[in-house]
Length: 277
Image (cartoon, rainbow, N blue to C red; front, side, top):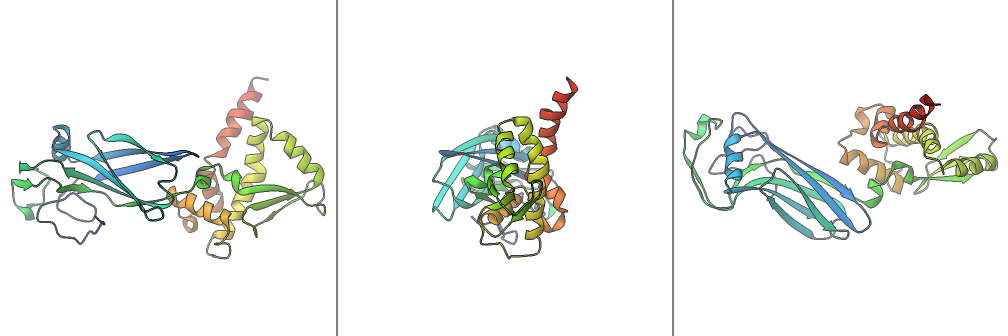
């Protein structure tokens, strides 16, 4: 069922933008973990209406999350009594945009339902629900499933030589599928060696790569010039999955979030180590 706040039900349903209940909500988060062979989705449901929760606890209703992928024509409904659960998919089941639709559904007929949180427009009740009736729903979520979207942001960059650059000069070329970080030959050799150390990688992440990510974000703001390039799609999809509005935040704020707070790696791998020297 598609989410439609204007749809009329013959009974009260807990849902966003509709006042069937005077208070309460169902909030569902879906955390996707993607690798080469499988996809694991951790689902967490927060339901603040105790009367509906009780129906779940006594086995008369269930949390239901429907996953739908248009690119693969795959659809799956997962049902759970527990508010937190995990779902595993094969790597080829989900690709591209995946719509996550969360519900609470009656799994058997329910008679005599009452709740103090019901809007008086429905009267005092009680209400009866048929098996399969939707008791609550949350807004659908669109998640982009692409293995490269879930890899570190550094995967969209490639380090290349530019013989025309001086030793400590570097440039960013955004006109290819992968962003080119152009450096001199001596510097590329040093960086290639330095990347074998985790502390050196943390330093590179907070200097060269952080600056390059900010440049990418700046280029994407208010422009569709690079939309057909892989690096642009990956960054936009990362931002979408994390709920980041590119145009609403400064470049350095977006860069920190999609790079998962690179300063933390510097603190752990460099600063903490230096403190013991």
